Length: 199
Image 1 (cartoon, one colour):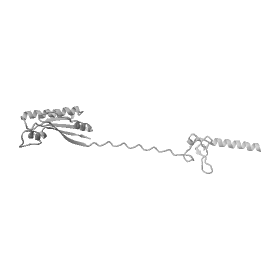
Image 2: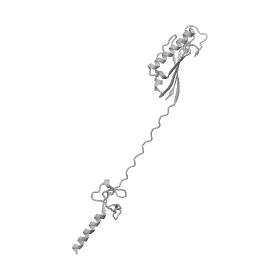
Image 3: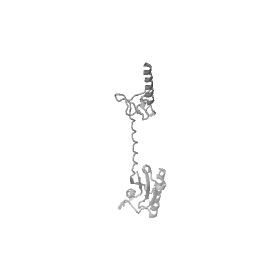
Image 4: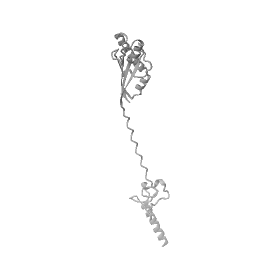
């Protein structure tokens, strides 16, 4: 009788071993073939093999940790909008001079723009002297400013030039004589700079 019981127990154990095994998707657990259903304990837990590791935990069994969802990639920052701008400067000259002095503030501003559309230069002279001489002097002044701006890094391709001689005075200075009229007419000895671009 004992031999029969032992034999029956061996047969039962062999049946369990063939019916319950660990499938790759349930590594570390006993499960039922062919459905791969994990065996449950009386308290609802999952039956683990002795070689179970924390990394084997599966959904629905104790020890399982849901994978962290990846944070969405941040939206790309919008491209900065460029604003159109027009700025004017005036370069003044001494009497009968075409030396523009320091124009680095103007070239620095032009170079600071994201996009330069144009740098328009117009030369002027006062009314003292012959009209033809003043035309030539206003042209020399505008050319001198253009050259100085290019030396400061401004592209020649964006610079345009023109000259007006004594024909577009900023001040009339009527009734003055001598040094007084020379000083008063300084506003007419100029190059007007108009800068168009985007920043």
